[in-house]
Image (tube, rainbow, N blue to C red; front, side):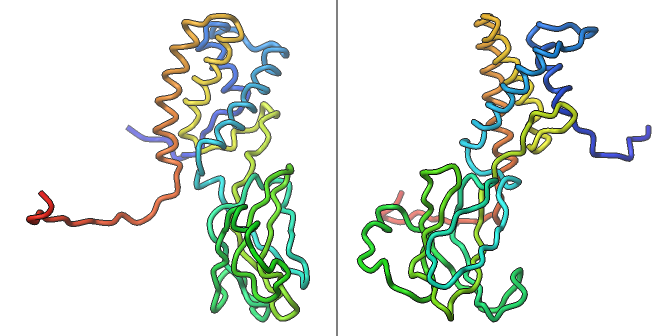
Length: 238
């Protein structure tokens, strides 16, 4: 037997919506979606994907983003595609030309709102060593401390959690790892059943989708090297 040479097949949004309607029993294999059904499914898909971003960080949804500092400025608004800023950042001296692998990068540690509030000298200047993410608006803001001065207006590399790409074009694929396709299909079937007052079937699809989501999240999470921990019993630990 000969396997296919390509490994890139992925269902587009329109096909996912159709399969969800068929799974829910609202379309048969010979029927296509109406314009209203597709429009409803696209809206529901957007809600599902938006909610999915609250289930933790997927490796694919996090990227590095460089921020150029300006002397005397301590508040910076992130781009419109940034949902949140995560983890610690790295400061790069303004004399460095290669921002991807600079010499002597220095950590800039994330702090919480209370820690920012309790800073006794918010007007201090120098090389930033901490940052706080202010998330009251649509775009997160970065508060740096100390305030960068002329000699420390370098670059900080942040880790940002990106918003998922829009799902309103039926010809495009979902901005998710391919392992999520079955979960999305079943979760959308759950929503379709709810919309059609088929609560018993909706409950079944919802339960199945929840189980699939756990496996998908485990696969999509950022991995780190495994550590082996050795323990032995003692007189104080049995």
